[in-house]
Length: 323
Image 1 (spheres, rainbow, N blue to C red):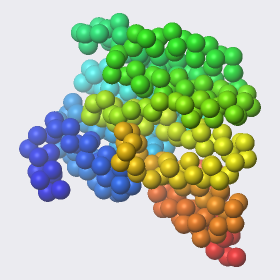
Image 2: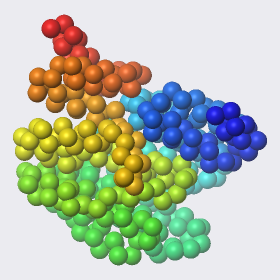
Image 3: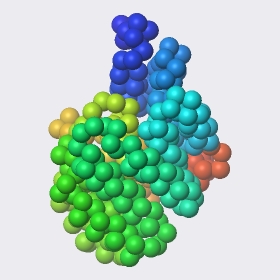
Image 4: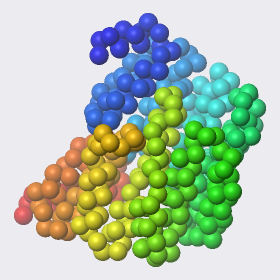
């Protein structure tokens, strides 16, 4: 660790400023991850501070500190305006869109996603290569995001239209992202089917879907994109909706265990532990329910007040321990 720290001090431009925190986060040592990010911010060049704030805001969001995340994103936007880095501003809007999505503020969510998309469409020529393919893969991502929002709002026909648009764009997106777009397409299709009550069809889509694949690059935006959508549990929710609790538990356990055979290197979202705890409680496994509620509450100890899952977990944990 001392060697990495020295390297960062010598050259703050190293990608280690966000790769090493990801390794800590991958081990669910978020205290270590945040410590590294703060060190990177301290030694970063002025034009880099906004990028590091983006990474910090991601982990804050991941741990339920949405207010702090939004605050850092606003600081990132100020930095981007000062430095004239338009894509950095766009990425901040993108993250703000996801935060609004989780808060159920869908109009703000749409606004932020549109701001992100417009900036990338305006800047596409600046990249200098594969401009047409880049436009199409960003457009496919945009339709994926809009489709998820539509599902949340019950606008199923609109979500299906986004699915059609994604399918039409898929052949022409950047080659390195084709697996990502295929994964997103299947994910949105499964969400639509689940919303329609077509549970068996949703399960079939999930079980046959190819994986997202590995991280394409190791820039900070790639590490964050790799974890979108943050909750990849549509198959587990489908099993649960069908009443197959044992299969639901197996799927959530899969999502919370590292498998070296999988190409993906997702972080483990803390909400999975909450959902597992609820399932174990239903099954009458008090010890495992307590274990998973405690794990969730420990990871989300600094979460914003009033989050339903946190309050519910505290209440139910207290009840289990009081029995």
